[in-house]
Amino acid sequence: MFQTYDDVANPALGPERAAKLREELKRRGLDGFLIPRADEHQGEYVPPHAERLRWLTGFSGSAGLAVVLIDKAAIFVDGRYTLQVRSQVDVGTFEPKHLIEEPATRWIEQNLPKGAKLAYDPWLHTIDQVARFKTAAEKAGAPFVPVESNPLDAVWADQPEPPTAQVVPHPLDYAGEPAADKVKRLTEELMNDDVGAVVLTMPDSIAWAFNIRGQDVSHTPLPLSFAILHEDGHADLFVDERKIGDETRAHLGNIVSIRPREELGDALDDLGARKARVLLDPATCAAWIADRLGNAGAEMKRGTDPCELPKACKNEAELNGARAAHRRDGVALSRFLAWIDARAPKGDVTEISASTQLEDFRAETGQLKDVSFDTISGAGANGAIVHYRVTTDTSRTLQPGELYLVDSGAQYLDGTTDVTRTVSIGTPDAEQRRRFTQVLKGHIGIATARFPEGTTGAQLDALARMALWKAGLDFDHGTGHGVGSYLSVHEGPQRISKHGHAPLKPGMILSNEPGYYKADAYGIRIENLMIVSPPAPIEGGEREMMGFETLTLAPIDLDLVDPDLLTAEELAWLNDYHARVWDVVSPQLGEEEKVWLEQATRPV
Image (cartoon, rainbow, N blue to C red; front, side):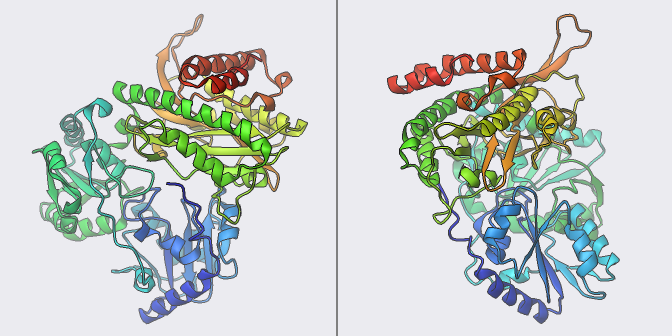
């Protein structure tokens, strides 16, 4: 499962491939083309045949966009990838840009020649994205035009075939609610909103609604497909029928009609012919679908994917599964941290061998289905690269005096995990301890927060940053993201960030991961997953408040903690957390590992 990305981190391939794309654009009478890191479903993980941005540029990050004009090109990435992009991309061919500080729309306005035809694949951009890019092109005095077939695909000679992995039922014991009940609930909401149908384009929504899972992309058990829910309670699932076996057909029963993927266009035409009112999520739905419906005569209603919120608010079976998954994962993590503590000072542990060993410990549980994302395994300066991806060329040996950051997760049938630990190799210096403790204070600030119903992640985000802000520091990523139930490790609408505007609700699972990164020196991040707990009274208070239940069970490196910087309340949280880790994890460890854990969870 472990990947090093050596196959893509080759900047030398960029100029030749960009030249081939430009030749194809000229042949079609086009002057530019957008290449997003996306497939038709706009998910974080895409199958190999949809890795167009990676093939063209060498950039392997999970988000990005290239704009290729006849005489220049740029690649846009967020703050997680500003260092990575320069190591993977020929910057003479693709000029790196920060997509927040220098957005692609602004670059298009400033660089697209008047009258030039800028093209896009309507399958690979959402309704909202197309509207923004169209406005930018118009400001430059140029048309923004869709293509019927992707010009990059025409020059990608060895492009892989789309995946055909089997779709399987997700057991009710883990799902907690029959698919028939979910579909009924969703379609009743459609009727209440006077909507005749909704097109589901996000595979995780389809997986949740129908209690199915797949293997079409790495690390997330998604069945790449589309679906239409009708107001009469019936549903159509558009999928490559080679993926559907007898067991899954029986599971879907009479509620879901299984139709070939190629019939989606005809089904949209039928909705248009009936003048149906169709719900689309403009933030996630491919523009091609909206165009087809509009041309067929359907009335489109803009709205949020109706599966998003109920999927995020886990039921009791899903929450119990998450707790079980994290107990299991905590044992693997603790075994790994004990292994690191014993082996790394000897100088024979590399970033790659450490990552492989952690996955082996998870595999030894007997229940690992996959890792939930490519492990971030960064020692020393590599740890300062927020979404670092190790290669055989960049892999460092863990050295005494350095910090080692490992961000990893697992997919189990009963839950998805995501955890980051930063550990010192040998004795840390005073600065490392101070910065680590400042990050820990932010982590505890989130973990202990109490807040009323209606509170958003944006309102809590400052709690994670306050200790860093007071020191003139910050981190350039969100504090927390939503997590699915044996689904995506990054799930909306819940998140804790400056832009987290969705109210937090009981049953949501989020990460708590403040950090600090000193370029060319070290990185620090402390991440646990948490459940939003229901409102409860506070002694002497007037209003019930929600809070968080921490799921992750793994020791936090006490050698990096400066107790003098923690308040009594923060120390109490740390000691209580470690007491819980000991109680849950220690009975499942060997004797030597248990001795290590006792020291690692000692009271401060």
